[in-house]
Amino acid sequence: MLVVTNTIKVKEGAGTALAQRFTYAGGVQDMPGFVRMEVWHGSAKEGVEELKICTVWENEEAFKGWTSSEAFRQSHRGAGGHESILGASLDKYELLFSRTPGQ
Image (tube, rainbow, N blue to C red):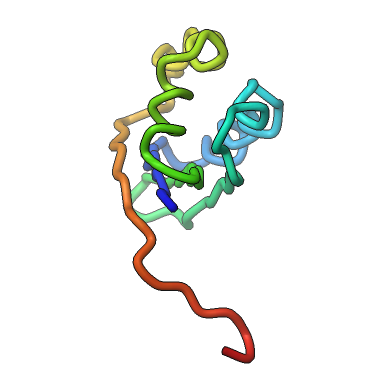
């Protein structure tokens, strides 16, 4: 299992509006190996809010399939032109252990 987080820093007050972009299906949900997507919104600190877009994949190959797909290109077209975005970073994490209630 692979979790990919895209942390987007935005100007204070812009986080909720930008997060709405992720509510529209952009093809990721149809990709082989896609498990789920979550959008997290952090509270403002020093005039900056954070969005964390977390996608969960069966494996690295599934994620690479998404990033090389036409659906990815279409869903990210014009994404860099949002004036409230201050920066972004992409991180990947491999799941090593998980616990559920009662385990």
